[in-house]
Image 1 (cartoon, rainbow, N blue to C red):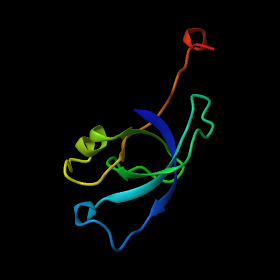
Image 2: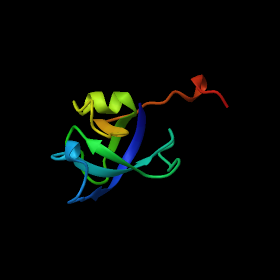
Image 3: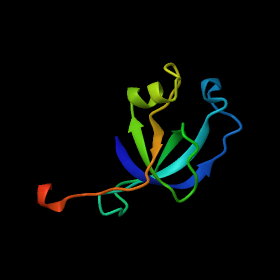
Image 4: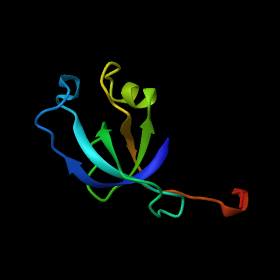
Length: 94
């Protein structure tokens, strides 16, 4: 799992039928300093996240499992909304 910030939504009137009913969000991956890390990606929202929220997302088969759509073309899914993150720097590698 990784952390990210929801920065937008995607509306696609024409899409794979297995994605019908899925809420699609644009999610910016973040590092532990909450700075952007990598390119934004499209995620399926499974928890009702909103714009600006910090979220936990999964990728690959775990994303399809979280969305309960094992046959859908889902690469990433939001699986949690973050309330707080505590990072103890003395345990991090430099």
